[in-house]
Length: 66
Image 1 (cartoon, helix red, strand yellow):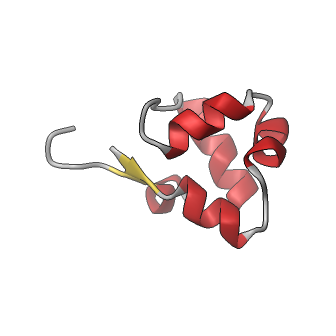
Image 2 (spheres, one colour):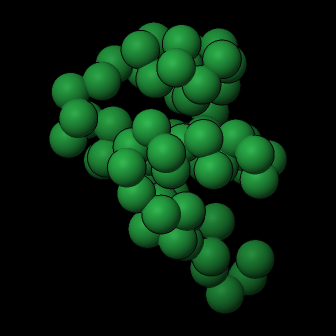
């Protein structure tokens, strides 16, 4: 699964630390999500969408092999 968390985070001028604080997770978790090393839970994905003001479908993209 690909994601556009970093793209949308940067557009809002948020640092990884600021986003992680809003989400209640570590900065390392945000980094892992952005780099595709961690797939967030449904609840965390929804929180990301709310904070970034985007739908989950805009942020996370399923690939053929998912």
